[in-house]
Image (cartoon, rainbow, N blue to C red; front, side, top):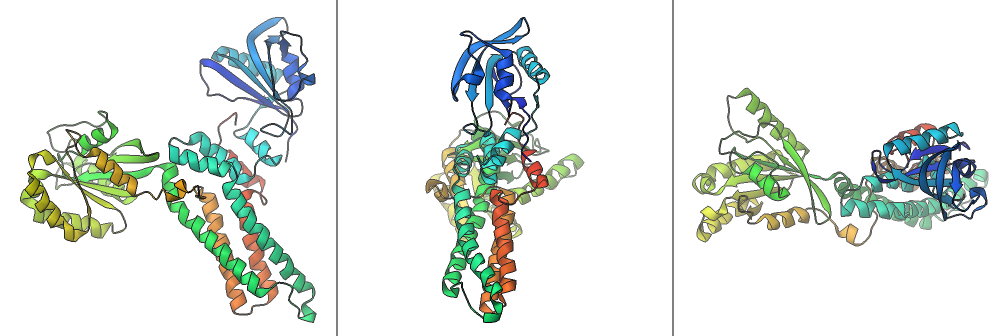
Length: 466
């Protein structure tokens, strides 16, 4: 599947800028680069050492297109594992297109999405999970997702899977050997050691599978729904959290008729806040649609912030407690934070009474003034506490990729089938089938088992030039 033709693409974002980088990779990359490059010192790029920089001009016949800096990387010591040229030119979109068109005429073709990284994988520079981490690294927009992508790109996840696969493969070969001597009824694989290995693999797989719950929300941002009656300060709270006037604030009830979403990074973790329409009985058709969407967003959210106005809660606490219980019963697995807004209107004794009333509900209570931005930092700390960042601090492997998660689940199922086979004395040939399937699932993660369709699906999501 490895192509020998030379590919070209813009490696920096499209559009005008200070500089742009045009990347060429392939068997003839350096020759093609040399054909359009005129060094200020008359250097021949084909004779230069790898990892060197050269100043000169890109020329099209007698026409000079730009003054550039050319980087030379000789395979296999390059990102793609092939000979690679990177042309750093001025960032004019006209210059970029002129140079790329010239290179196409000289024998390059436009690179497909992710083709440089695909070639790195095919040339053994990266395994498949590391290649996927490249895309995650590019799209990371907070400290946590960046740290996870870096750890995976450095091979932390791959090494863990490869070690398990190697140990299982050793026992699999012994089991297969037993099949060749089935008539002699001999055992080459120590069943006690095999059982210990299976338990260890099962433990690691369960830990990796459990980490997906954390990894997925860190990668995509933790959705937080802000709900409550109309005009209790939901939009003001969103604005206070974001520190900008993102949502319309009005004394008129029912101003927010659709959901408003925005993102905020707290302590390196991304949160997606959703300001919803106020929950109340209404005859307004448009507003009722917004309220229906509110409950849909609660369903999708990882955390629910239920906002109340302080003076109303003081007077109608019994009614509101019933509403809180309804939300808790409807969404029992979601963390629920009860927020009393406009706290400056209550005395310390009144706040203490509210806390006493809410104590039996076993909910988290936060008291704030969204308008005055009182208690906002404490609320952010509470949100951060919902994320298990212990694995990040300990640099443990965290799974964020749905494809990996699916393969881990299937591998765990096969390992459990093998354990059941040992417990019930199932014949070795059936146990061997389950082991092969587990090895296959491990191989899918790292790319030791792959096909064109799988690779096409993965690299189609990459940006051009990477």
